[in-house]
Length: 192
Image (cartoon, rainbow, N blue to C red; front, side, top):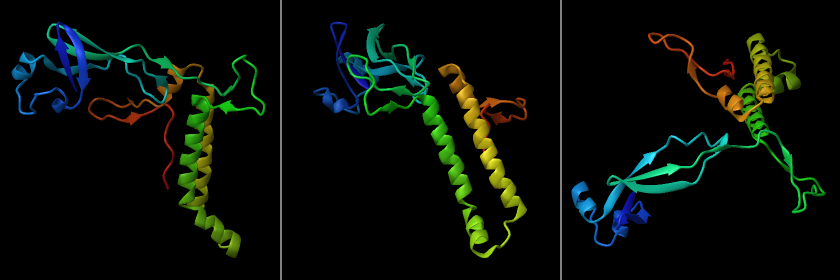
């Protein structure tokens, strides 16, 4: 991303150098700067995970011969479901529900569990059609998937803040520097 600066004011921002009249992609940083064109430096300190936050607006600043792009502070998304209302604050009829982050994440967990179970569904179908026994390790695995899904959904439900919910998904080293073990508090689904 590049910015055109005139009289210490940013007048144009674009990712394509050709958009700056006569600028050539082969120009050096010095040639660009001599023509008032600066490569944008990004400050991502306010950016947060968009699954959990609405990131603030991007703005550009020129100081000390550097154009910096940064974002205003992020705000947490709504945790719980919300019923839609009209402009007077009255709930719509029929009710329209805007899902909160908890519902979205729980639905994703359910989808993951269903995908894990799908690989062994044929054992269940075979058992129903021909009474062929389901192997014990498959039955144990399927039960473990359901149990883990329920545990994950409970942990998501118990998160009181958006920060607590986000923390469930962040991988941390639970081992040592020499033998790292990256895990997240939410855990993982078992494998067969």
